[in-house]
Length: 614
Image 1 (cartoon, rainbow, N blue to C red):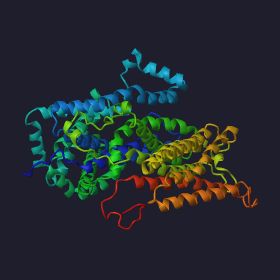
Image 2 (image 1 turned 90 degrees about the horizontal axis):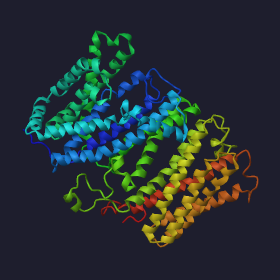
Image 3 (image 1 turned 45 degrees about the vertical axis):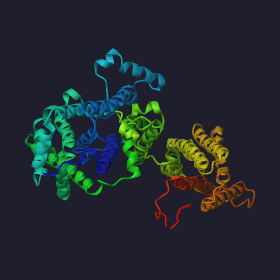
Image 4 (image 1 turned 120 degrees about the vertical axis):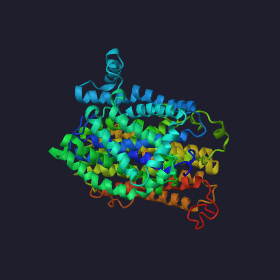
């Protein structure tokens, strides 16, 4: 018999799958805004075909997440006692659950109450709602947890599994049984038979309630997946079989999906007590899970990536924040009456970006980290692992500065996307004759897109400026120059953000001119980096950008060639000015971020394509 793999060996394929599954969950919730189901809030657009579309991920998405979560718990058992594992689970899950139930979920339910029951809005309206929710009358109906039911179930399933782990011989016998019986075609046949059985025998009576004590079909499904993940993750023969059957599983899933959709759409789809539907459902469910695990194990098991490292830590806070952000975004965007496609795109972007902003904010605040499911800032594991503390730090140098510069790299891209979406929502907008600010003015059909986007761009500019200032100090030791660079960016960002509070043509909108101070930033960066001799191309780029902005200023202010810029083409000149004004920030942030990276091994940059490469 093949010995089990060490539970301490990192499985990056499971990290990739977990991140991907949570990403699909966010998109699924965006889809529910348009589905004919009783969700928290809805768009003005509803599509009947969403009944079938949700079946693309519905049968397997959460089951896969429970399976991966069980595997993750198994890796926690390396060099830990059951008591330590139980304590670690409690410390990781209890604070976010309490925080979410007290604040994140009430925001969702308050917006839902305003939408469906006419509850008064405003800050006082939320205070009244919160008091109502946690009064004796409100608590009599239970504490609503909304999407946090998943956290409750993970906590309970972890406790059940740790209890089984403490019973001598129970889990080893289960592991051996799984390894012995899930070989060859039985890898597909046995789990599918189990899934069909519980679908036929339990689902008609219990359904899916997400209420712990009334959800017996869900427990038969999700607890079984959790324990299976815990017991199977170290059994290599099972994973080799999943790899071997990955294409067959994919083929089964491709065949089962349209049949399952037809059964839902056709009036006779529930005939014969729903048994045919349960059969196809169970086949699709396990076939997709096996295909995902098989392909992941084959191609992603050792695929480590900085992006994966970032998203692995970010996933839990993103999960906690995403539904509250989405519900608020629907409530804000719906009055604009946008086309369904554009609205859905904005909701998805708002949810992802808004949740990432929440994560980036809370991870920097030590006392807030546990409430969002993050480990203490010093990186100590839960529970305290003295051996881990004694190992040298593997964090890259200047990690925080580089993350701030990432914001600077993303800011111009975000700004261009925002302007493009705002223009799409303003069909009569004339790029030749109209100013960009008019996209957020009183004549725009959906000014909130431009105004909210520019507000975000201003915040990103301020964050990037701090990164620029810290980068200058790190590279040259020029403290004063670094501070001045940061201040210029922060003031410019504040001007951008404040201008959105007074949309055009309000005279106070002209506070946006503070953003023009960013024209001086290339010169200030040249000053701060003057002592560096290994950045010639960046310095030349900054000089050319400053000269380009100077030339555009002279032309657009009619200081020379007075007739060149006129009412018929002023919009195009402003577009060119805006691209230069914000575009250079992304390039400079990218170059400085690369300079702050750890030096690559000898020969890694042999072509010398990066400033300062050996």
